[in-house]
Amino acid sequence: MTKSKYTQTDPSANPAVIVFGLDPAGKPKAGRFPGKDATLARKAALALKLTVCNVNRPKLTDIFSRIPIGRLHAQGKAFLPFIRRDLYEELTAAANPAMAAAAKPGPNISMAPAAKPPKDRASIGVGDLVLCAESLEEGYWEAIVTARDGDNLVCRFKDYPRLPLVMCILQDVALMYGG
Image (tube, rainbow, N blue to C red; front, side, top):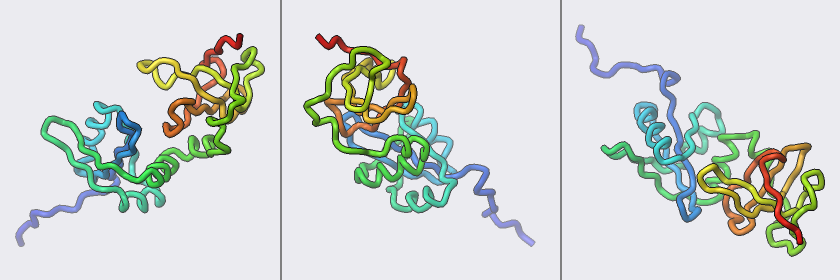
């Protein structure tokens, strides 16, 4: 009997992945990669500072079929096609359910004229204007508090309302001079 050149591999050993994120202009992009390309896709995502999630839940499996196939280049970079904003938000919610539950969008308070700096940290509430860091490299930007639970805050950047909401703790935000 001859051996088949096709061997069965355990799909759980190297699950398929979805790499996703926003480009510099804030447009959502994502690509799906089968298990055989998962390791290279993770390396490319790390280099491009994108998010990677394993396709290991039924909701992600459904989304996986609607995401376009990503491509890996010989230089180790990945090409991710653009996707619709609603699909990106659905993918973000499925990839990190805890973050999605805390960041449910409420009324659009970024357009509210009443956004003003609080007097002190203890008085920070929904609708207040604070300085919030997107990342260590990007620095602090004006943000409006959309939710507060104890010392945990959810903020939306004032001038960039389409960017994802940012979760931080009370000590991480800076206060602005209220005049």
